[in-house]
Length: 245
Image (spheres, rainbow, N blue to C red):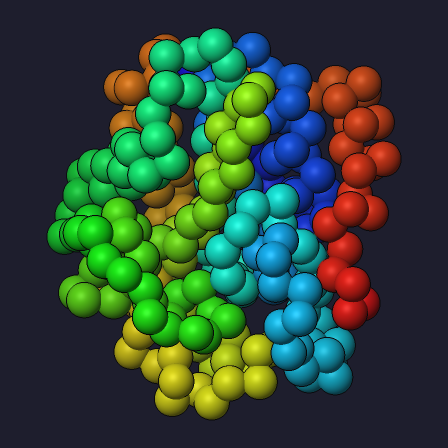
């Protein structure tokens, strides 16, 4: 398993890097990362979502479009992960839901090893029309004490599967709601952050995730970014800037 850790990259760089990695790696990769500033990411089909741009500018919250679907996520006090599997790896044979379940099982094991009693949501039909990803726990996503703790999205081509998601450390539900012109009470108590339950360290979370994923994807081999890949990333960043910006 290739492993890449990148901390505090700009939002558009994070999104472009996910795609460039997916297009270039030849074996499964786990990327763990954070964001330079609080950033709202929108699913690729959310171009008509109503944003409170004045508030976001005042609060220093950036906005990006994800290459994946799903709904809006506020990346702030969290750990983001990306899992990439290239063709012709055997996991490419899994359906979207099967692959998603496999990833959720790895994250669940990592969190349980840190004494968090997380649950994997069973199959369900999502009826909510909210633009916020964390308002509802979707099929095979993780919850803790009945509240969503991880949100994820996926893209699939003939060449790769890419799934990325957000593991919350703090909820920031008021800021999240204001970005999307929602009432804070619409999101309060719908999700929570790990550090609002326990004083788990960021470093321990990272270690536990790497250990869990390596059980499925194999021994860890550290991946290094080179200039050729970075040049591809910088050329692609513009694809992921919010149209509203």
